[in-house]
Each structure stands twice: as C-alpha cells, then as structure tokens.
Length: 211
Image (cartoon, rainbow, N blue to C red; front, side, top):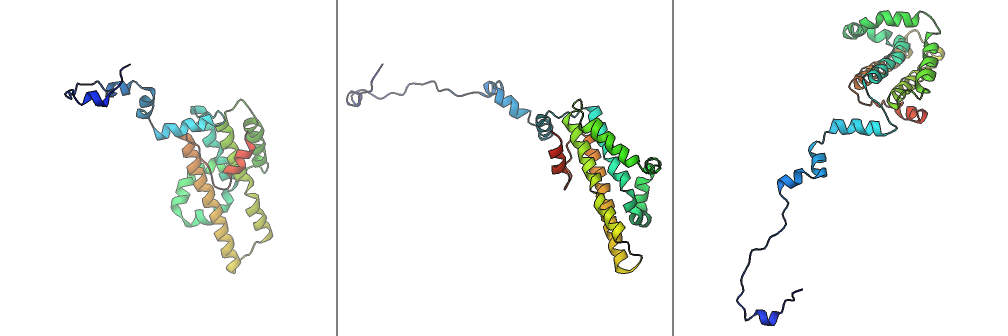
C-alpha cells in the first residue's frame, strides 16, 4: 500500500497522469433492471396492475362484460324516477329508448328486482370462483340499488299533487334518476375498458362486503 508523503512530494515535479474513472455509459444503464422498468412506465397499465394486486382482481374480457351488465340492474329498478326528465328532455329519451324492451321485461313482474338481487348476491358476490373485480362491481351495483329504498319511502310518505311540494318531489326524483344514469354510463364504460369504477357513496360499502 503506498502512502502519500507531503514533504517528499514537494521536491518531485508534479505530473498529472490519466486515471480511469468509473462512468456508467448509456448502454450499461439500458441493461439495468430499474432502467427497463422506468422505460416501460405506463400509468394506465400501472393502475390496472394495482387493481389486480389488491385482492387478486381480474379484468379479462368476460369479467369486464359481466361487471358492465350489472350496473343496468339499479338503473332498471329506478327508471320510474326519470318520469319527469324523460318526458321533458328528448335527448335523454332517445338515449335510453333502446333499453325500453329490457326495462319492460324487468318491470313485468313485481318480484323481478328481488330475484335479480338474490341472483347477483349469492351467485356472483359470494361465489369465490369469480374474481374480486367482478364481485366488487356487482356488489357496488347492489348497494346502489338498495339505496333506492330511501327515495321510495319518501314518495310513499310525501306525495303532493301540486304547488311547491310537487316541485320539490320532481327535483328530487330527477336528481336520483340522473345519478343512476351517470353511474350507469361511467361504471359500465369503465368496466368495458378494464378500469375499476368507484361510485360516490356506495364504493366504501361495497369494499366492506367483498373480501
């Protein structure tokens, strides 16, 4: 091992010799695993991978389709709250007109809503053969439908025929319907694209029910 002596070094001419310094080149960085990971960084893919990591969610084609269809259940069950909006706004009527045959079948038997509820809950939500992605979306649709109990109770207990009371009921019903319509469009389209929709009010309740 060589020791540097400052006294003797003063009598020796100072010369600078080339010294090799380690400097990683771009080619070596490209071979590093972390560089490859950052290069392929994709926010959408990362989001999907996080969804799958939490509870082993699955977002393949059939799961996306089943999840998207589930959100028609609360919309069909609460279509009556749109009686004022649909008659006043033609674009909304044109938008949902293709769904009228399915809505008519759903409303043809009083127990259809309850039977669909039992089917979705016990066949899908409580079925471990389905991935968490499907079970969460199904449970979210169920919770959204359960919340329709409150506007139904309000209409049964407070049903004015005219005046300010009628205006309030019309506004409340229209708000409920628009929320169902927006939830249907947003959640179904998100499912078809493999994303995880989280609806306000109902997402946390659905999380607690799906293990």
